[in-house]
Length: 403
Image 1: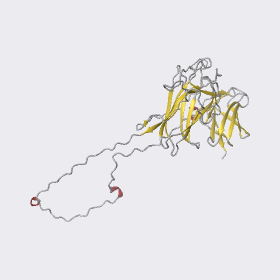
Image 2 (image 1 turned 120 degrees about the vertical axis):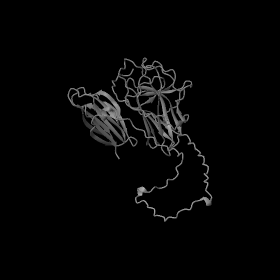
Image 3 (image 1 turned 135 degrees about the vertical axis):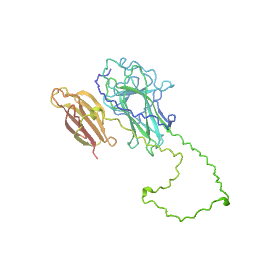
Image 4 (image 1 turned 90 degrees about the vertical axis):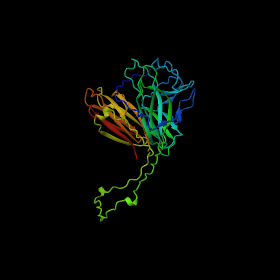
């Protein structure tokens, strides 16, 4: 069984699940990833950095497997799944992920065959496989970010599942969102990242990733019947009274522009509907970031590469407890600062040039304020950042790629 870690985060991330547009009908899936059956070739286009594939049906920390079932994993800490999600397939696989100790990407897949400038529904079925047990009263729950990027690494869409809760009995849940492919792009890269650190409660299964095209109905033309001409009967000339001749008076013309009424052009009865670009809104800031000041204490510029971050208590170890957010996503939850560092790694490159780390104090220890030292090792250089945070003020550090 995994080592117990305490997790008391209260902020739920929001999956940008958009209701089906009223003028949109989704076709059957154009692309489906169901992980095949039996011993299949690797699904990942790019192998994950923090995860390794293993055979079997009970992968350990930092590993994943393509399997059709689970059975009595970790002394019964996981649900037993007798089959995957795909209806009707025999011995079909799901992807089973045992979270790594640090957040990271577990699936990267190139998606070909999309239509450019087209609206699609993205969907995936997921399940937390950890049982609700007294051995794990404060679980670390999966929080998955789903990104779609162009081959050049530009963001096309991004969604968040929020916390994938444990369930009393195995039950798949569908996560879906609507997005529009960029112009002239028929291929995108699907990237799935678990933002929560490893620990009890953070293990999950996924299956049946689909892309369905949105088809908008063709406008129906309405025919308007022409009116019959009106015949005006005139009296015979003999019966027509003689018209009195009058001197015509000059017509007073309007003197201001506002008094002039211009004839309007005929408008079409049914204008063609205009497809609106759907804007995906990222989730709001966690309350602990939104309701506190977040002053910048240090900005570090470094070359491309992987950087290591170590956080220690600064001075006497007095029980300071902190959380760390990376780009507004929870990375470290309520850990005590100690002589042994809180450590994690971050990749800085052209696709990820900017990183924001925010230190959040949950108490002031026995010697206020909550103080720490963050050691950033990047590009062969060591940067020491001294941080002081309180219950009203966080501390922010920027790490940027050198131009």
